[in-house]
Length: 78
Image 1: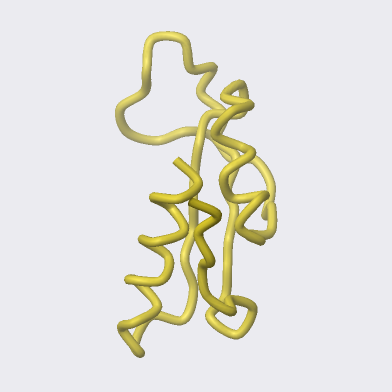
Image 2: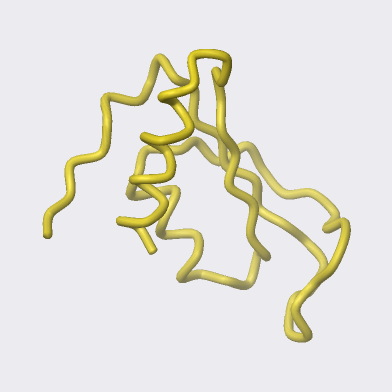
């Protein structure tokens, strides 16, 4: 997932009108939390979930953000 998210981050920032990206996941999904952390996203905090949720979600989302100025590009380790 980290590779996919890194490549998608590169793709999104190829659009010069995009200045920031966010990744949002359920607070109990610890595996998902590792993805934005490894890519350099900043944790903004928690918020009440909106929209559809998985059955085991608790209804609280973690929100991460990355600004274009903080992104130097994704280098795959593969």
